[in-house]
Image (cartoon, rainbow, N blue to C red; front, side):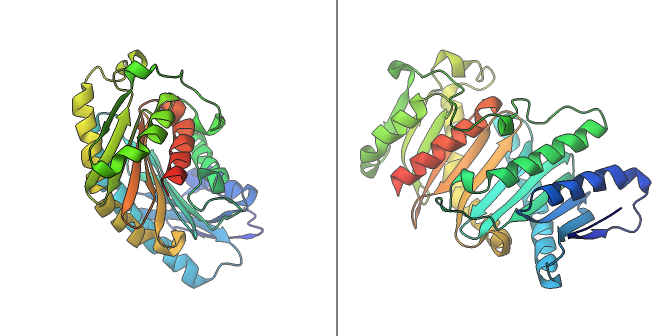
Length: 314
């Protein structure tokens, strides 16, 4: 197969049945110029790696080292997120000042992973900075799943919905739960309340290290209650509080293994599950924001609101 403009490294034992997958990967890299490296992984083993022809061996080796480490981290995170009862971890985005790394699940233990150094004149943690690459990788995963008659893992099609469009209805004030858990959290409450009341971002909290400063959510609204039939609001709040308290430790490990692709510090992380997503934004040397939605079709809008809220907190 022609490989103009790209370098391809394919496992020797792969037969012709892999050709269509390989072609889809190659076409994705050729049509999205900001993809620097892309790798297909199956059972923790690299099947295919594609990168720009001008890349050097040092860069390729570094990328594969990240792929191996992130594969292990993603599997561990998937297990830890199961008690949220929102499905498997299907997409992870790690973004820093130097670029971003994407890890997308195709099937159990089969992944596509990619990196970019895309920049632009926007905030380094903004989803808009790398969203075009994010969408390209997610669409590639859908195309591979289509080969074997499987539906999209993103039933709401987050990558087809403009993030600025508000998917959900605005939440009545009486259905918004808010709590300042620390004296320093009170001043930020209005910004959090406004972001969450828009509807798509259903939970947002601010932390200083492991100390939670505030939280706002819409778990008591009639719309969100439809997502909470198995776990009551208070228990789900506890889940996200614990996730936020552990976020710095977990994100520190992800930052360490992906630093060669993302740069330091890690500014944004997305943990996209089958039912919604959790967002992490670094907003200071010791502070971070956690956002969440349970609505898969609102993932892009919720991320957009979380990003704007992170800017307000800096």
